[in-house]
Length: 222
Length: 222
DNA sequence: CCTACCGATCGGTAGG
DNA sequence: CCTACCGATCGGTAGG
Image (cartoon, rainbow over all chains, first blue to last red; front, side, top):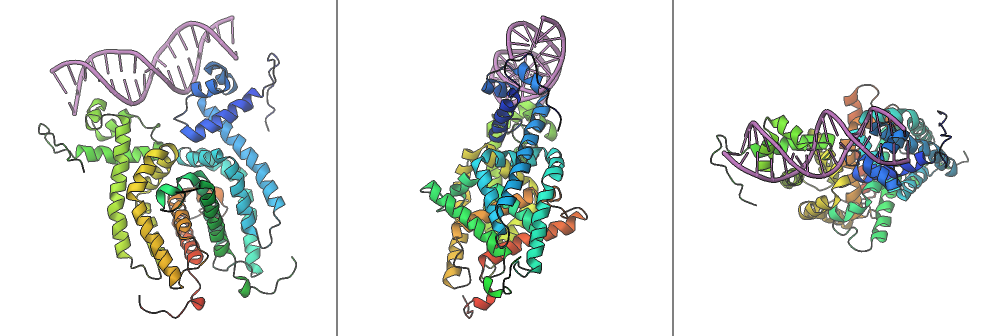
């Protein structure tokens, strides 16, 4: 929204800002906000600490920038996901797409969890603005599904979506931890088990949301 | 296992250790390991920092102590939960009991998530020792349920348990964040919605694990 | 975007 | 369990 100030004196245009955001995102995600020093961020992009502080006047401002950049990506990407998957019977497609999206950059899932833990208020404010509208759409879709007899009547739309977000984000963030918790998971080939875990997640979502086909009313268009 | 050294010169016996662990657990959970200073821990129990370092020779040792104390509690409490709920049809009882247990001390759920994020190896080692045997029992129980035709055949026992742990811990840790994510959740009375969310979590678990009663074979004892 | 520098706080030690 | 103290690093500023 704010017109980004371009510094005329610099050789390259200010994509330095974006490089800093990318590096800070990764470091905050892996080591946490308090576990990451400005020095470490600056070093990773090849500048000095005071130069970083020119782009972001404080460490808190950097955090805010990281959070806003992530949410901005979501706005676009979630819209794309929702548009791509024609949601009729397959609301779980949306979930699958979300998880796939997060799996490409597990950074984001971990950063999200961290911020939920130690920056609750800041995250809440951003969520309310950027995420709530989209979850609202999904909830409404579930309600319509219930009216059409496709979705189970005992499902509580809001609570269901909330649980699926928790499950999806948590699953991605901790995908590699499975073997330590449950015997037989991820002891051997990692990819195979990751697929199994993902498939199970989607099965849980699907079974707990949709009525069995046999019990559904005859299907029509729309 | 290690015989705890009792300091003869001290007036009170060394329950100072336990007070330190309790306070450190709370602070690590709320502010994170890197966000908590030894000074803050010492201050909270009313001693000086070097005195803390007498009980725990380093910050890392304190973290380890906190983790081990938590896992030790689990060993006992999980056993109690498993013994209490006669698991026949109601494996979700175990889940409900677990969540109830965590809800009493949300500290533990948050601490667990934090450690999973920035102390992966340390946590893995502890899990492998203390948690895996219990999850193994649950998995075997699910398998038996499948053999008896009570549990859905498409459920993958290991992956299911893993997802339920992620869901349970995540739900407790972020219970108060729901309103910011999903419209209509926790906008009004918090307790009411917490119950709704919990009920939905249990519904999801139950529906996705058990076959509908109608489809089950005639039930016999054991 | 840099060098030079600041006070505060960090985890930890010495020594009793 | 304390006082006294350490070097290192923290986030941030001055000034160019």
